[in-house]
Amino acid sequence: MCLWIKIELRSPLPVYEQIKVGIKEAILSGKCEKEELIPSIRELAKEIKVNPNTVARAYRELEQEGVIFSRQGIGFMINVSTAEIKEQFLSELEKELRIPLKRLKKSGIALEEVQKVVGAIWEME
Image (cartoon, rainbow, N blue to C red; front, side, top):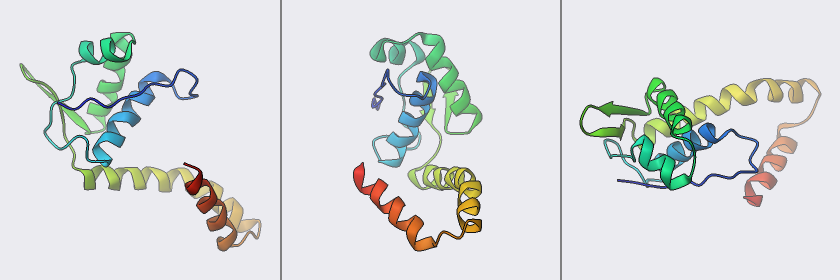
C-alpha cells in the first residue's frame, strides 16, 4: 500500500484537490503502481488529519476520472499506469495553457521568450 500525500494548509488549493494531485503525482513518480492499494478513506483522513468527507470527495472525483477504483471488500486501488496518468496530465495542461498562450502569440511575444520564462520557472522548483 502506498502512502504519499502531504497537505499544505497555506496552499490556495482546497485540501481535496491537494489529495487528488498527491495521488496523481505518486502515480507519475512511480511511488504507486496500477492495481496497488491505497489507504482507505478513514486511514488517509487520520494520517493527514482531515475530515473523512474531504478524502471521500477526493476519492469520488478520482473514481469519476478513472484514476482509482474500489473493489468491495478490498478497498481503493490505482486504475491507471504512469504512462496513462502522464498523458492525462499533459492533456489537462494543454487545455489550461491554450488561451494564455494564444494571447501571448497575438500580443507578438516570441515563442523563445515564453520558453525562457517557462525554463526559469521550471528551474525554481
